[in-house]
Length: 81
Image (cartoon, rainbow, N blue to C red; front, side, top):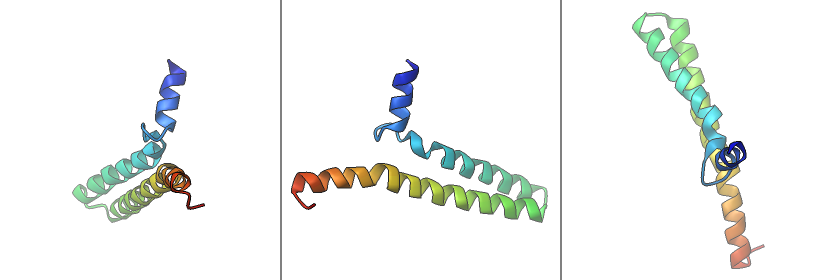
């Protein structure tokens, strides 16, 4: 069962490869909100930076680890090597 779960998370269908970056973005959003509510400038800035990095990393990971292999297979099928 663990092997099936690992395969699902690491495959294109599961999109699990983007989870660490997504979780970092979520943590950044929480820090940003807590810092804004408590009027703590440093925490708000750090939260915003972590949120931005998490969003960018998630998008980049999805693009590089999920979409590129799909495009490569499509190009091979169309004979565009």
